[in-house]
Amino acid sequence: MTMITDIEDFFSKGCGRCARFATPDCSARHWSEGLARLRELCREAGLTETVKWAHPCYAHGERNIALIGAFRGDFRLSFFNAALMKDPEGVLVKNGPNTQHPGVIRFTETLQVAAMKPVIASYLAEAKGYAAAGVLPPKQTVELELPEELVDAMDADPELAEAFHALTPGRQRSYVINLGSAKASATRNSRIEKFREKMIAGKGANER
Image (cartoon, rainbow, N blue to C red; front, side):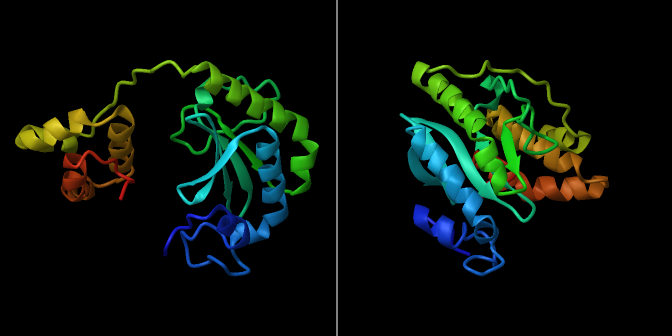
């Protein structure tokens, strides 16, 4: 599939990431009214609208603020730099089990957007304020527990070891999570072999 690059395509057809693109079953079409209301709130906040990763992305200056997404069971407003968000209303949730900080507002009904308008506007203003002031989340050093198979592979392959240690912490973590999800040692070894070229290219496990 070809991912969309025109913002209007997302709201009329979807993101282009799957076979449901431009069909009645597309999640963007299913949640079209709610997505349109989120879009309106982001525009009212004075944010610049662009397309990133085939989704509507809202920025202030050179910094991304929030991303709109649609899924089968819900639609979402995801904040970048979630570690900064104070969340006084307790509405933010984690994007997934491997996410460190809650930074997502999920909606399961279109009417929720209107009901939460003051909260959403407040959170967008907060994120925009951090961007305007150049405030970034503090860097966190997390010790990764490397799978034994990866340690052995790097011991036997200096080029692989150098490439892995040159990766950003987030990319290193993506490999640890991916390898850790495999139950069998043989599967982990197979994945390491498959990932070798990606690591040397400086890419994360989920990057193309």
